[in-house]
Length: 184
Image 1 (spheres, helix red, strand yellow):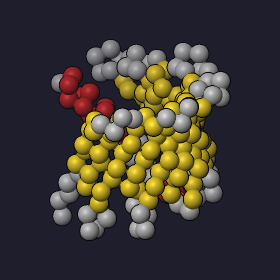
Image 2 (cartoon, one colour; image 1 turned 120 degrees about the horizontal axis):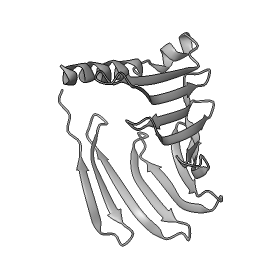
Image 3 (tube, rainbow, N blue to C red; image 1 turned 180 degrees about the horizontal axis):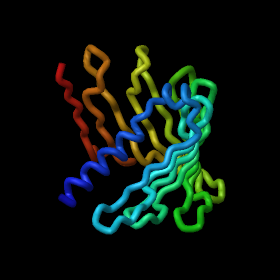
């Protein structure tokens, strides 16, 4: 019985966050909080908190452990196309900035992503390349000195679905192949 109750609690909490950006904007939601109550102890813990802007974008997010302790906090800024242009991750204990990611766009596609540490020092830079159809075909990631640390190549089928992602380390050695299959 306890497992069934827990299942329904988790299912309900997931459905609470299934609101679309359109619904969030339409009903002018400012935030959503998900709590979980243990059926046996009746103890309630916060699981997730999201704060929204006027376009329904998540601008602040907090995730909590089963004990109710903050385990992840982040904030985001968006451009006029509702693309994330800045994301800040915070240290879960001190709430000081842990990492800042800035993304630059050309048209609708991200072209550069810069990751900074707490002191504003560049940690890594990723450059994205696209084919004539706008499909991402390559990601090149460099360290703060400009040395390649990772390269990912993408392939697509005739319908434009991603079929494969191959990732190489800085020496050009293949470290992972991810395949995507679709059922029509």
